[in-house]
Image (cartoon, rainbow, N blue to C red; front, side):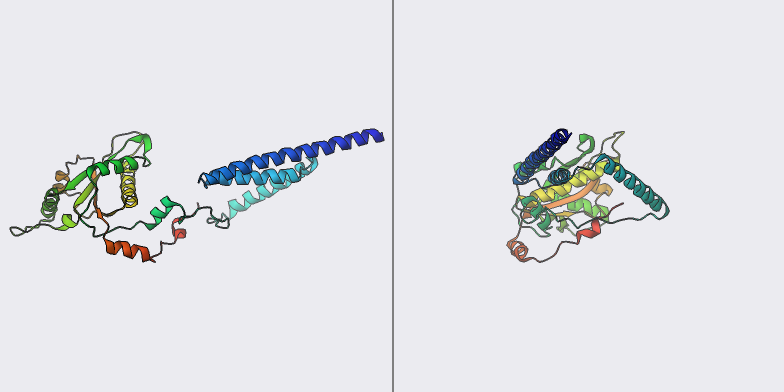
Length: 293
């Protein structure tokens, strides 16, 4: 009898050591994956999930509950869940976001996030502009915009030189403005290069028109970011005359298309560059934009 007890004890200890070793190996593998993930620059939800998995493995290695303990725990949890459900039914409550866990995001160290957070609209740009080949590469880079069913419901029109005067004439016609001979609308002349953004939705049973306009707006914002990262200043302008008949006619819009404004593009003046290096204007508090159901 005593011998059998010793054998059972040895087997139990052997199983415990094996379970602990397996859990330890799993932890080491997880640690390696997390470490590699962070070294690759990916510090998002995937890495956090692995870290949580590692924590669960460690806790599981420390204590394996008996079937009786497990049954009692399940019973207690079920009772608590039932009570919680009843309470929630009677007095529903809404919790806000939980900011107690530290963030793994560093917007200063990451070049993309830093560019996003430091982007500014430049109202007065210098005459130098990107050439059309540069614009083509910029458009190539922003084609990754979120686009349901890949409909690409947007396009840009290049406006340079005398075409800017034509835009001024169309704006005057829309506003009913009659100028003296030799006078011109100078608003489109504030930059040597303008890009007009046209939202061009297509009929699709799963993608409503409003969603396609959102995609076009997303392409416009990516254009600003790409130009900013490439070293160019840009200002997105629109106004009440944007989709008036004379302006739409100039841009050759069809009935279903929507003109979403113009991007005034040029070099960033030195005075702006100096101001940006010493700017202390804070970003708005992000808490106002984040909530839970």
